[in-house]
Each structure stands twice: as structure tokens, then as C-alpha cells.
Picture (tube, helix red, strand yellow):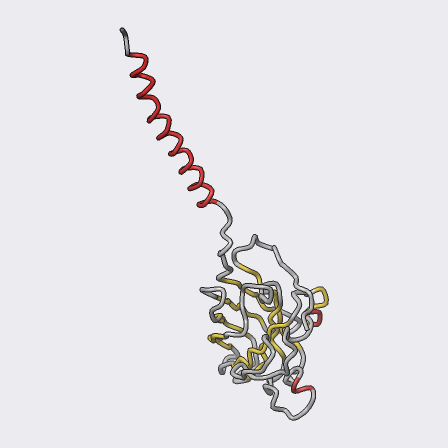
Length: 208
């Protein structure tokens, strides 16, 4: 009796089984590798500052983890020599009316204005920048209130450089607890995630 066909059939079974397992592994591996990661975070954002005044600059925000501090760095030029200027994040990334349409300081918890080191402050309170004798300010700080991630992300909001000094909420008047008496708005820009396509700007609504 010729048993060759039976032997051939029995040999094919493990081959088909291995091929099926391989296909399943490849499929799920591909799906895992190429699906959008739910844990992906925005790690870097940039804002270019300009306005009606000569003040210009570029600021970079970096955050290595979603709940970690944000590193803020950059350079702002054409300030008055050896001067201080209020430096804040405002609620709206809306430049339709220049810096005036960026809303108020980003303050989602409805707190009084304060210094960056205060435990009670606006989220957007980043204090003052200080220029050198040539009118250039180097920004280098870390802040644990702001974030590039989550529902209160600063991405899509605005950075504003003011015309005056921020009194950090110590001015003993009502305006001090709102704006720090920092005066007009010299330059501003919308914070954009470096992970988004060029020109893509998410404009958050005012948050009080």
C-alpha cells in the first residue's frame, strides 16, 4: 500500500500551523508598531514673537514627560537696555487684533496674579524677562505650572511680552492681582507644537 499521500498530508499540517502563527504575530506586531500611541506626548513647542513694537524673539518649550516641568528657553531682542518686561502666557491664540486679542493671562483655576515662585498664581505667570545692555533678554527657566499636554495645554495659546515690569502681584492694588501692572503688549505669538504640520494652530477657548 502506498502511504506517501498520507505522509505528505501529515507533513503539511505543522507547516500550515507555523505559517498561521507567523501571520498572526506579524499582523499584531505591525498593528502595535504603526498604530498611533495613546501615550504619545507633545515634547516641544515654539513661539515666534512680534508685534507693533520693534520687540522680536523666539521661545522654545520642552517637556520630557506629560506631568513633568517645562523648560522654557530662547532670546528676545530690541528691548530697552537693562530693563525688565512682564512675560506671560495668555489664554487665546488669536492674533486677529494683534496682541490685544490674546485674552487675559491663562488662569484656569481662577487664582490671583503672582510670581513664578508663588504657590498661588495664574498658570501663565512667568514673571519678568531682563535685558542686557544691548536690549537682548536670554530666557532660561523651568516651570511646573504650565504643560504642553492635557486639557490645559499651553499649545495654541499665546505668549505676550509686555511694555512694563510685572510687579508680581505685590503692587497693593486690584490691577496688580490681575495683570501685575505690566502695561501694554509689546510683542506676542501663538505657541505651536513642533509635531504639528506647519501652519496648524489650535486656538483654545478662553478659560477662567
